[in-house]
Length: 114
Length: 111
Image (cartoon, rainbow over all chains, first blue to last red; front, side, top):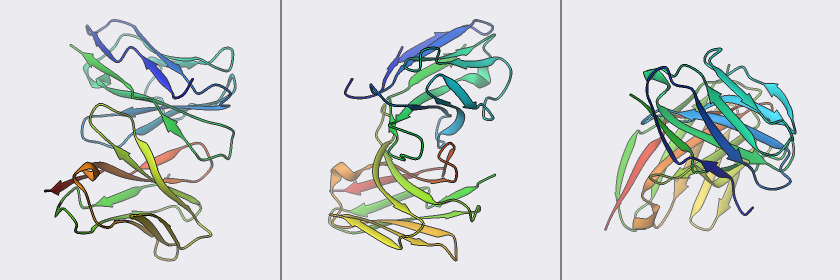
Protein backbone atom coordinates (compact mmCIF):
# COMPACT_ATOMS: atom_id res chain seq x y z
CA UNK A 1 0.00 0.00 0.00
CA UNK A 2 0.89 3.65 -0.20
CA UNK A 3 1.38 4.06 3.53
CA UNK A 4 1.30 2.27 6.86
CA UNK A 5 -2.26 1.35 7.74
CA UNK A 6 -3.44 0.74 11.30
CA UNK A 7 -6.76 -0.55 12.55
CA UNK A 8 -8.90 0.14 14.36
CA UNK A 9 -8.36 3.90 14.56
CA UNK A 10 -10.08 4.01 17.93
CA UNK A 11 -10.67 1.30 20.51
CA UNK A 12 -12.47 1.56 23.82
CA UNK A 13 -11.89 -1.39 26.13
CA UNK A 14 -13.20 -2.17 29.56
CA UNK A 15 -10.53 -2.78 32.15
CA UNK A 16 -9.52 -6.42 32.05
CA UNK A 17 -10.51 -6.92 28.41
CA UNK A 18 -8.03 -8.21 25.82
CA UNK A 19 -7.39 -6.12 22.69
CA UNK A 20 -5.63 -6.67 19.37
CA UNK A 21 -4.24 -3.85 17.25
CA UNK A 22 -3.32 -4.39 13.63
CA UNK A 23 -0.58 -2.87 11.47
CA UNK A 24 -0.24 -3.21 7.70
CA UNK A 25 3.23 -1.90 6.77
CA UNK A 26 4.25 -0.60 3.39
CA UNK A 27 4.55 -3.53 1.01
CA UNK A 28 8.08 -4.92 0.94
CA UNK A 29 9.24 -3.17 4.08
CA UNK A 30 11.42 -5.50 6.10
CA UNK A 31 11.57 -3.57 9.37
CA UNK A 32 8.51 -2.94 11.54
CA UNK A 33 8.29 -1.06 14.82
CA UNK A 34 5.65 -0.48 17.48
CA UNK A 35 5.64 2.65 19.63
CA UNK A 36 3.40 3.83 22.46
CA UNK A 37 2.52 7.52 22.71
CA UNK A 38 0.92 8.80 25.91
CA UNK A 39 -1.05 12.04 25.76
CA UNK A 40 1.28 15.03 25.40
CA UNK A 41 4.41 12.89 25.19
CA UNK A 42 6.78 11.65 22.53
CA UNK A 43 6.44 8.10 21.22
CA UNK A 44 8.23 5.39 23.19
CA UNK A 45 9.69 2.25 21.63
CA UNK A 46 7.93 -1.04 22.30
CA UNK A 47 9.28 -3.65 19.89
CA UNK A 48 11.03 -4.27 16.55
CA UNK A 49 10.65 -6.93 13.87
CA UNK A 50 12.92 -7.78 10.99
CA UNK A 51 10.69 -9.79 8.69
CA UNK A 52 8.97 -12.31 11.00
CA UNK A 53 11.71 -12.25 13.64
CA UNK A 54 11.13 -10.17 16.74
CA UNK A 55 14.65 -8.90 17.37
CA UNK A 56 13.96 -6.44 20.17
CA UNK A 57 11.10 -6.43 22.64
CA UNK A 58 12.85 -4.53 25.39
CA UNK A 59 10.27 -1.74 25.40
CA UNK A 60 7.22 -3.87 26.12
CA UNK A 61 6.05 -2.64 29.54
CA UNK A 62 4.82 -5.94 30.90
CA UNK A 63 4.14 -9.54 29.97
CA UNK A 64 0.57 -8.50 29.17
CA UNK A 65 1.92 -7.04 25.93
CA UNK A 66 2.63 -9.38 23.05
CA UNK A 67 3.44 -8.70 19.40
CA UNK A 68 3.72 -10.94 16.38
CA UNK A 69 4.41 -10.76 12.66
CA UNK A 70 4.05 -14.39 11.58
CA UNK A 71 4.47 -13.97 7.82
CA UNK A 72 6.76 -10.98 7.83
CA UNK A 73 4.12 -8.49 6.71
CA UNK A 74 1.07 -7.70 8.87
CA UNK A 75 1.76 -7.32 12.58
CA UNK A 76 -0.54 -7.53 15.58
CA UNK A 77 0.03 -5.99 18.99
CA UNK A 78 -2.00 -7.75 21.66
CA UNK A 79 -2.64 -6.44 25.14
CA UNK A 80 -4.12 -8.80 27.68
CA UNK A 81 -6.13 -7.78 30.75
CA UNK A 82 -5.99 -4.09 29.83
CA UNK A 83 -5.38 -1.54 32.57
CA UNK A 84 -6.12 2.19 32.61
CA UNK A 85 -2.42 2.98 32.27
CA UNK A 86 -2.47 1.23 28.88
CA UNK A 87 -4.54 4.10 27.48
CA UNK A 88 -2.41 5.68 24.76
CA UNK A 89 -1.95 5.93 21.01
CA UNK A 90 -0.17 2.90 19.60
CA UNK A 91 1.90 3.75 16.53
CA UNK A 92 3.32 1.37 13.97
CA UNK A 93 6.20 2.30 11.67
CA UNK A 94 8.00 0.48 8.88
CA UNK A 95 11.18 0.94 6.90
CA UNK A 96 12.52 -0.67 3.75
CA UNK A 97 15.45 -2.49 5.33
CA UNK A 98 17.59 -2.58 8.46
CA UNK A 99 19.85 0.43 8.39
CA UNK A 100 17.43 2.34 6.16
CA UNK A 101 16.35 5.05 8.52
CA UNK A 102 13.40 6.37 6.54
CA UNK A 103 10.69 5.28 8.96
CA UNK A 104 7.08 5.81 7.88
CA UNK A 105 4.55 5.95 10.68
CA UNK A 106 0.90 5.03 10.55
CA UNK A 107 -1.80 7.24 12.06
CA UNK A 108 -2.02 5.04 15.12
CA UNK A 109 -4.71 3.37 17.18
CA UNK A 110 -6.05 5.38 20.10
CA UNK A 111 -6.79 2.94 22.94
CA UNK A 112 -8.93 4.11 25.83
CA UNK A 113 -9.36 1.76 28.78
CA UNK A 114 -12.39 2.55 30.94
CA UNK B 1 19.99 4.10 27.42
CA UNK B 2 19.55 7.21 25.30
CA UNK B 3 17.89 10.31 26.75
CA UNK B 4 16.70 13.17 24.53
CA UNK B 5 15.67 16.51 25.96
CA UNK B 6 13.75 19.04 23.85
CA UNK B 7 13.10 22.75 24.37
CA UNK B 8 10.91 24.73 24.35
CA UNK B 9 7.72 22.78 25.00
CA UNK B 10 5.63 25.53 23.39
CA UNK B 11 6.61 28.18 20.86
CA UNK B 12 4.52 30.92 19.31
CA UNK B 13 5.83 33.00 16.41
CA UNK B 14 4.38 35.52 14.01
CA UNK B 15 3.87 34.40 10.44
CA UNK B 16 7.04 35.05 8.49
CA UNK B 17 9.33 34.87 11.52
CA UNK B 18 11.78 32.06 12.23
CA UNK B 19 11.36 29.26 14.74
CA UNK B 20 14.15 27.32 16.46
CA UNK B 21 13.74 24.13 18.47
CA UNK B 22 16.67 22.61 20.34
CA UNK B 23 17.47 19.09 21.50
CA UNK B 24 20.25 17.44 23.43
CA UNK B 25 21.07 13.75 23.57
CA UNK B 26 23.09 11.67 25.99
CA UNK B 27 24.46 8.68 24.05
CA UNK B 28 27.55 9.59 22.04
CA UNK B 29 27.02 6.44 19.93
CA UNK B 30 23.79 7.83 18.45
CA UNK B 31 24.37 8.50 14.77
CA UNK B 32 21.05 9.55 13.23
CA UNK B 33 18.86 12.48 14.23
CA UNK B 34 15.45 12.90 12.57
CA UNK B 35 12.81 15.55 13.10
CA UNK B 36 9.13 14.70 12.90
CA UNK B 37 6.03 16.86 12.52
CA UNK B 38 2.84 15.51 14.07
CA UNK B 39 -0.56 16.98 13.32
CA UNK B 40 -3.62 16.22 15.40
CA UNK B 41 -4.86 12.69 14.90
CA UNK B 42 -1.97 11.70 12.66
CA UNK B 43 1.26 9.83 13.05
CA UNK B 44 4.66 11.55 13.07
CA UNK B 45 5.87 12.60 9.63
CA UNK B 46 9.58 12.84 8.89
CA UNK B 47 10.46 16.36 7.76
CA UNK B 48 14.26 16.35 7.82
CA UNK B 49 17.08 14.25 9.22
CA UNK B 50 20.82 14.42 9.72
CA UNK B 51 23.52 11.83 10.23
CA UNK B 52 26.42 12.17 12.62
CA UNK B 53 28.99 12.75 9.88
CA UNK B 54 27.24 15.94 8.74
CA UNK B 55 27.05 19.26 10.58
CA UNK B 56 24.20 20.93 8.75
CA UNK B 57 21.47 20.07 6.29
CA UNK B 58 18.91 22.28 4.60
CA UNK B 59 15.71 21.62 2.69
CA UNK B 60 13.95 24.77 1.49
CA UNK B 61 12.68 26.56 4.63
CA UNK B 62 13.84 23.87 7.03
CA UNK B 63 17.38 23.29 8.30
CA UNK B 64 18.94 21.11 10.94
CA UNK B 65 22.31 21.61 12.65
CA UNK B 66 24.26 19.07 14.68
CA UNK B 67 27.05 19.65 17.19
CA UNK B 68 28.40 16.21 18.04
CA UNK B 69 30.86 17.47 20.60
CA UNK B 70 28.16 19.20 22.61
CA UNK B 71 25.53 16.58 21.73
CA UNK B 72 23.14 19.26 20.53
CA UNK B 73 20.98 19.42 17.44
CA UNK B 74 18.49 22.04 16.37
CA UNK B 75 15.65 22.56 13.91
CA UNK B 76 15.33 25.91 12.17
CA UNK B 77 12.21 26.90 10.25
CA UNK B 78 12.35 30.18 8.33
CA UNK B 79 9.50 32.23 6.88
CA UNK B 80 6.97 30.34 9.00
CA UNK B 81 3.47 29.82 7.68
CA UNK B 82 0.22 28.93 9.52
CA UNK B 83 0.41 25.39 8.10
CA UNK B 84 3.68 24.91 9.99
CA UNK B 85 1.63 24.86 13.22
CA UNK B 86 1.95 21.37 14.72
CA UNK B 87 3.88 19.39 17.33
CA UNK B 88 7.51 18.81 16.40
CA UNK B 89 9.60 15.97 17.81
CA UNK B 90 13.32 15.44 17.66
CA UNK B 91 14.72 11.93 17.99
CA UNK B 92 18.01 10.07 18.19
CA UNK B 93 18.87 6.62 16.89
CA UNK B 94 21.81 4.44 17.79
CA UNK B 95 21.37 0.97 16.40
CA UNK B 96 18.67 1.21 13.72
CA UNK B 97 16.12 -0.17 16.15
CA UNK B 98 15.07 2.18 18.92
CA UNK B 99 14.29 5.77 18.12
CA UNK B 100 14.33 7.83 21.32
CA UNK B 101 12.05 10.86 21.02
CA UNK B 102 12.07 14.18 22.77
CA UNK B 103 8.96 15.36 24.57
CA UNK B 104 7.78 17.56 21.72
CA UNK B 105 7.32 21.26 20.91
CA UNK B 106 3.90 22.71 20.15
CA UNK B 107 4.58 25.33 17.47
CA UNK B 108 1.90 27.90 16.80
CA UNK B 109 2.29 30.32 13.88
CA UNK B 110 0.12 33.35 14.39
CA UNK B 111 -1.31 34.98 11.24
